[in-house]
Image (cartoon, rainbow, N blue to C red; front, side, top):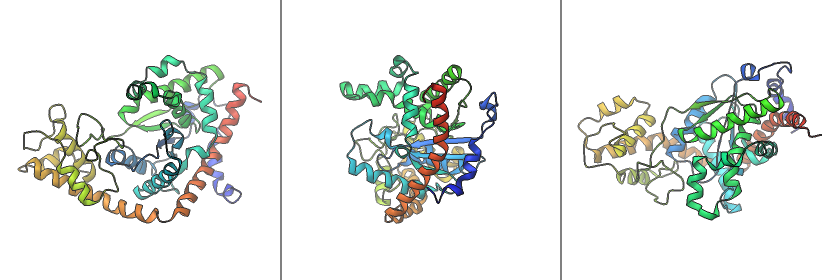
Length: 355
């Protein structure tokens, strides 16, 4: 910490906004926050729906924080040894994908205690029915029946604390997180109304890529936890595994390649993936695929994904061999995050009435 403080004076300067500013929402420095759970290897949907946009956001004005949200991961049972390794594996994956610790703050959530302190304050402001009506609680608690934990119910409040702790102004979100983002905004407004203007009300940055669908069930999104191993393409899959998964992808009985998500979910999912990994517009992808049947088109998409992931996979393998480097990246990032979080938490505790 002593060695690094001098390097981060500019971060503290970003944080010291004039106290007399009546509306922090207008005057706040642009600050982006997002997080990812360290459970399982990132898959194609994680990459196209989140990580790729994270990389590009590093080059925009303002500051950017990306957190490996390990506190969120324990809302379901975790093996401690596996979780520790998963945190390092996720760090390696993010670095390999292009997250640059010199352009952004990459840190481990649990290493910054202020997240849980703010979470408790916000938990005491939100009504129980609001959390029970969130779609993800209904879906996950229905699956777990009576095994759903209080942590599973309240983790959206911790999400809000993650964002607000850094006075974040923007949050990249997928379409399935819009409800949770509304909760973040409502809690910011509620705190400001009760204690005076303090938090910017963060805005959503909707990712341009829609949800990547399961290769085996195109009505559902691609998921790390899908029990069908052919449903999800991981960024560390071998070329042979990727070909096999796309070869087995569910389409329909029409052989022509078209983009019609409402009526041809499977083929349209392949077209969307192809477009995203090549950077070509959907219309151009369809035009170039004219004359191909879906069986051959699946192999074309698989080749494009293999080409996209090959350098990332190679870099992950190299990074995972240097555990000390990965731990240092997280320690340095967590120290930088703490530099931002500590003064905010001290100030809001005074507002709440704590000594």
